[in-house]
Amino acid sequence: MAISEKPEQKPEQKPEQKPQQKPQQKQKPEQKPQQKQKAPLPPSRDDSAVRAWLFVREAFTAGTWRRVAYALLAFPVGALCVPLALLGAPTGRWQRGLVRRFLGRELSGSSRGLAHATAAVPLNLLVLAVTLYGWSLVPMNLGWPLRAAGSDYSDAWGGPTFAGAWAFHAIVGGFGFLLLMPWLGRALAAVQLRLAAALLS
Image (tube, rainbow, N blue to C red; front, top):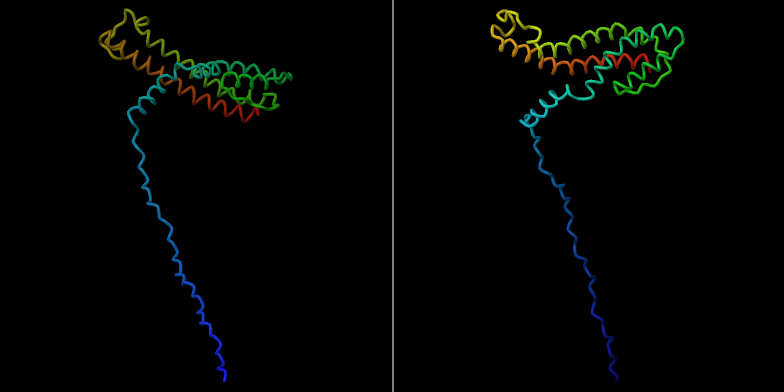
């Protein structure tokens, strides 16, 4: 009898197991160390020296003398523009040109300038008086010996000696007003410019 051969049984293949993936942990954003705000540094000696130099040199800049020129011209030009504006003259253009030339501000407008010329008369007169008086004190006090020759120095400021009286007048009245007037003129010119911008634009 023929022996029946058993069919070969293939070994069972186990299903491949995928490696278990570990749950990804959320990475915390890196926290940058907080930088402490630095306290503002006190002004150095160099900054103080620069500020002092800017304060002193203001009397010798072109801008200062342009403002002085405007202070001297604004009143007579403005007073002259009042009757001329009534006659139809282009006084607004003249006054805007004066502002542009000496204060460095371009004003665009079509105003004839009567309102500005009339309203600015009191202000311009005040600025003219302050400018003339303040700047005249500089040469008057620097040259004090010329106007005090032969007088008694005992009652003079800085007396009773001649040297003390001259030093006081030169330092306080001469150099003092030389340093003060440019900044006072800057403030007065700013007021004049604001009025011109309001009425001439």
